[in-house]
Image 1 (cartoon, rainbow, N blue to C red):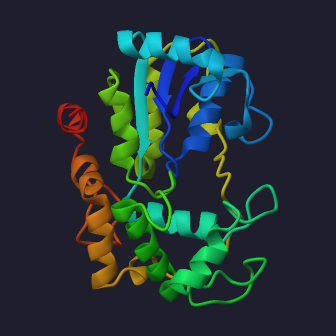
Image 2: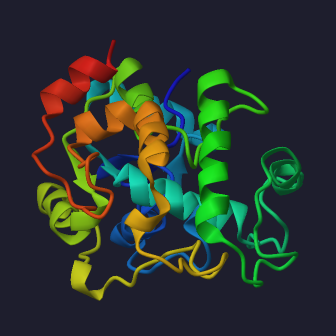
Length: 272
């Protein structure tokens, strides 16, 4: 199986396991800059050179050798499950993607037909009941994860622990797990621990939120989207994420972690 979703600088200064919807665009650009002294011109996900990625054939051997020998500092980044699934909904379901089309072609029509979801019209700009639509999307996300129907789960809403675990199961070891909510502190820890060919100051790095502007703006506070049933569904899907990455399941309004991540526990539980 190897190391899907794993990126590594060409200098092999650092290895990163991508978790979708968790600051991955910004992290990728920081890695790119730390090697080249400039940011990639465009969405870092589109970069085919200048960085090792598991999806590029020529990168698989160097990534495998590095990760299995733990030759470089390795990290990943996680996010509160409540805000992550909300972000996925507004970006991937309600939004028009950077190619000018809906995400995954027939996915949105399927959701409108089977789950009664509204996405704000053809261009996603009309008013619609965001809360009702999101809760129906949550049923769909649960169905994909629990029963793999009407389709397999998508990487943007499948559990973070699933992404994080493939790296461990295949022989990788994390030195750090960064919280998106405390991004500067966590990313500074990573940069302090590695030697980069080009110096990079976090304070000068713009936020590369590639999904910004794809979809309608969230009209309500996070907690308004989650009633008792929605919280139950979120817990069913993301139970391990809440426990391992120390997020507050009881209070959707609290996006901040409530404890320290125990890396030994993460490796033990996700390495099984």
